[in-house]
Length: 262
Image (spheres, one colour):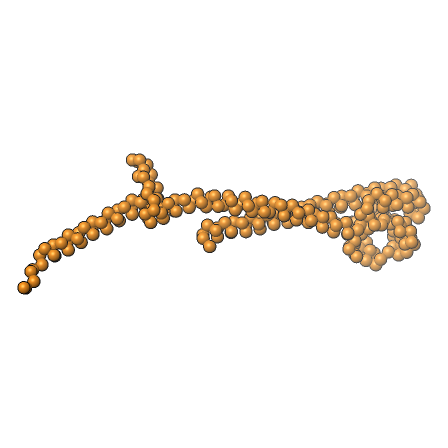
């Protein structure tokens, strides 16, 4: 393989790796944007629910008497397909209101309780289990005492489907962009290498005697092919002079050779 072909192959490989890295960066950026959007949506929903529940609590209503809470969490569950369940939990860890009505009155999982205990005064807690994400927020009264918790369970399948869709879309576009990019890169590299090696090829042809280059005007820079042609002509001239000198010496030897006896 010629040096030009090796250089072009190396450039094509670098271009392919560069495009693959760009695809990975785009994938990561879109996935991160999707996560940030989901977090912002969860924060908004939790803030709305907490505000509504705390407003009723501050009116002096106990948590279990806020019947509006069940309607609120049902509306939140119906408004977003990524939300699997919404529930309001008592400080003792009992599900007071739940979109899964069969779970009302049952204690929460131990992993949830551990996350609540770890959250301390921060109020926000989260648990990831079975591929889903549970995000919770504390509900406080006017005295800052926790009177319950709101928990939203988000499906992890939506993020997996979104990532799969992004990967499929990027792959489909890559099958179109990659060959075109490699073709353009290869053609550009070939033209650049051809232009860059033109002087070397002309120099080689000059040294082989297959091409002659006119001498440059007086004061102009001498090109490499011209120098090669001048060197070849000078060498040829010297060789011709040596041949003439050798012939002259041989002629002198033949003229001065004594006659052989009869």
